[in-house]
Amino acid sequence: MTALEKEKKYTSDEFLAMTDLKGNYELIDGEIYSMSPSPNQNHQRMVKKITGKIDRYIEEHKGKCEVFMSPSDVKLDDSNIVQPDVFVVCDSDKLDGQTCNGAPDWVIEILSPHNSDHDTVEKLALYQKSGVREYWIVDPMNEKVLVYPFEQAKAVGIFTFTDKITAGIYKDNPEPLVISINEL
Image 1 (cartoon, rainbow, N blue to C red):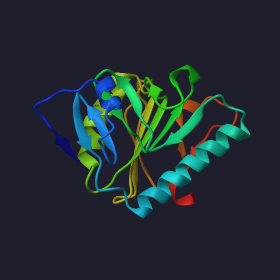
Image 2: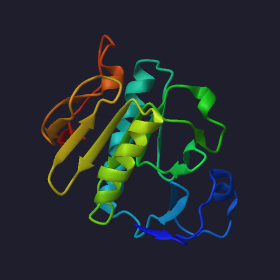
Image 3: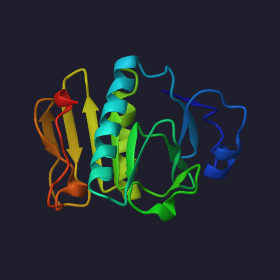
Image 4: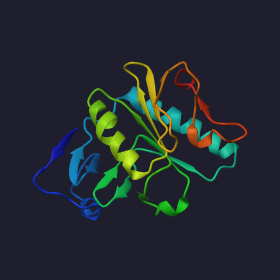
């Protein structure tokens, strides 16, 4: 992930109006970052399976939330637009048909060798500051999942791919959403 034109800061409106950008880009603190190279096929399979599991849970429990996957823009504020791998939005007023305007309730990023620092440092701080309720970092290289329950005063949870992980935003439901990466 590399920043483009570091000397100029862009607003989210300027970024969204750009039609000459080819590929996937994010705006972090006013700087444009290229999301290349594209994720590999294992990364995409994981995104698809996690999204499917969450979507089925929401449908089966007649939930009001919606799950989305990249590429889909999330405008966190006037200087930050991200494209999380998977995100859940429970407030439909944040959705305008093109962009999520405001922090999603739950964000899941799947690490790739070329983006691990971006997701584990920059985006971690950005998601916490922006009001994301829960952030998962799925690390396929080490078969670990880091769970950051931002809305709770709890420490980060560290899980393996065989562990059953309860989604914090659904923990109080009569039947909580539980995900085991190896079972997807």
